[in-house]
Length: 391
Length: 166
Figure (cartoon, rainbow over the protein chains, first blue to last red):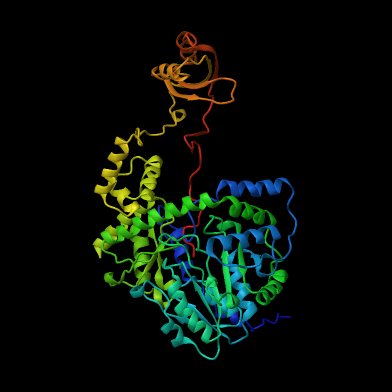
């Protein structure tokens, strides 16, 4: 008796339609090669400060291995409240406006799932982190991409927003300081956008994961603007500021009605973040300031170095004011970003990420992470220079 | 050069004194000339005392050195306190460091380097213990260095990150 083979796809249409990340191909290529200098790593090159690691070890030694409340320990949420007030003048109440999540990624996911109905449009500011589009689609939403350009340092303009808003637009998501461009927004620039956001009654998902990593001025949080807190979902975490990427610990802050919705999803999917990571994060917030400042100082120096070096070898690069990425233009070479990145990897063993992986606005650019040692940066720049001279 | 750049320059040199003025200028967002002038000023002000390398001698097979830390009790002298005897101890080339201590049951901590334990012992008994102001000494030999001058000597520094990530 022959078995009936189903012709129906085992995967949902939504998942089937999601394209694999463009970064994946470069990861596979670079991983298969020896002696690669990577400027393609989107995480700090520091190990988590010892005081934070030690707090986690101590938590384990003392037997803290149980679940916590769904929203996270009140102790950590109070520390987050205090930290946001002190650093960025943003006030969220620990008891009902903050949820501790499994990284900022989960925060983005539960925020979008909590607010989107099928067909709702979400404005996505490009170039952007590769996960926004698929997470929106998984939540049943429709991403609408807003363009920015090197001409104005990849800052979002109110005109571009107005151009893309429709009656179905429910929310906007952006990330400043930005991955991949390193651009930031100041208060005056935010205010112009806030007027449009208010006029169209949009929700805002503000991904501020790089908030601590600014080099020329303090980060301006969108949620700190007058009347914006009540329409803002602030997303952040410990990965970048405290070099805790592998700990998977983030948080989301929003008005109580939104956190209540997000908490429903969080409690039925993740339940809670790991307790020992939460206890380590308390230590990071209480006593990690000096560690953060030393890391930021080092990033700023390397930012200066890479931007000056690109200029020296003839690649135009706007000065990134935050995060740890430079986003030089390679348009002058006549190659597409993908061709450039692939040839650079094959011919000189330097891994960079093609800018169009982060959206249409990234075309003609490459993302170079300077979260690597000065020695590696120097060698990478020498190789890029050699590569350019052959084109 | 502003105060912050000056502090950063010192930290960079403390971390790696091989960095040249052009590298330092790029890191600090200034010019090589300005870096050179600032370094010279810092040397003149005795803020920068030396440009040494931190050597892990234990990695050299025929490392000829042993290091000892010696607790020295002394009688302070009128008018000059501990300074006179401390300065005298400093003059011996074998002595690598001298510190005045508080609450330790002794007064001076002396770090001493010699080729052999016997050489160190001889120095202590013949040169140090015989000084007028010295009441007693207690010698402790260092068996292994784990961390020195803020640097963990055997630390792994390999990059555990994935080669490309978003």
